[in-house]
Amino acid sequence: MNTLTFIKDGLKWSRITNNLWGAMVKRKNYIFIEVTPLNGKYKVKYRNIEIKRYEKQEINLMRQLYNVVQADYTLAFVLGQHYDHYEWIEECNDLKELADLIEKRVTFDFCFLGDVDASGVPDINKNIFRKIFKPKLYEKSEIYNFPDGTDGVIVYWVDKDGKEHGPRTCSDCDESMWTGHVINDGDEHCCVDCIHKRYTSKQLEEMYEDDTQYYTEWDESELMEDFQLVHEK
Ligand SMILES: [Zn+2]
Image (cartoon, rainbow, N blue to C red):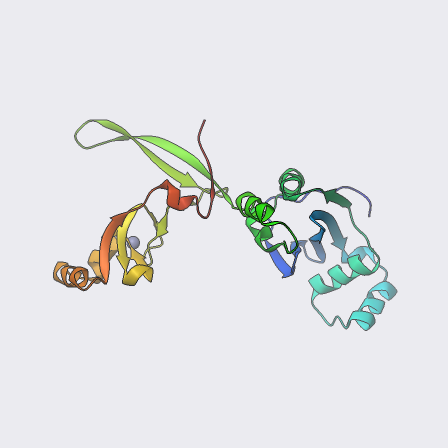
């Protein structure tokens, strides 16, 4: 179990406990990433556990000791922990190094690390931490021909899976939006197309008078609260 393994794309990670994430590679094969904060430093342990590589008596012992009934991922995890099998372990001096390591060695969405226990980390680092662990959005631009014959450039932002993100999302059609309607102080947001399916112009006017809906525009600074923006070169 000492070969270096890289995580393949397309794995679905989930958080198992605080600072521990796991993903299924295939049936009876799980990978785990454990991040342990140590006085401002971080220890990262990567395990790739294939249940079939263990002896029957080893598995039975785990079932007894840890009361693992069925779930394969729990069994895989306790096997890895109990026998301390892992592919690699690294120590990072700070959150920046931790982020670099994870970006280089595993395909692992940073936002999952958002809840790494950062207690005992000075506030200044906590801010860096928040900045580092924001998921990235990539700028895309396209030439657009307006009906009047002139050209313009449309800029939009996509995540690593190509999904488009805007400062707000329409509550009805789920489209990302840069302009739209705010309903009840932000309880809901609605694109221009959808709002007219919900309400008549007269209703919208009344809601505007009552301060329960208004039309507005958002800009990139709103996206930056939740994402790191990577500009097109
Ligand atoms: Zn909509």
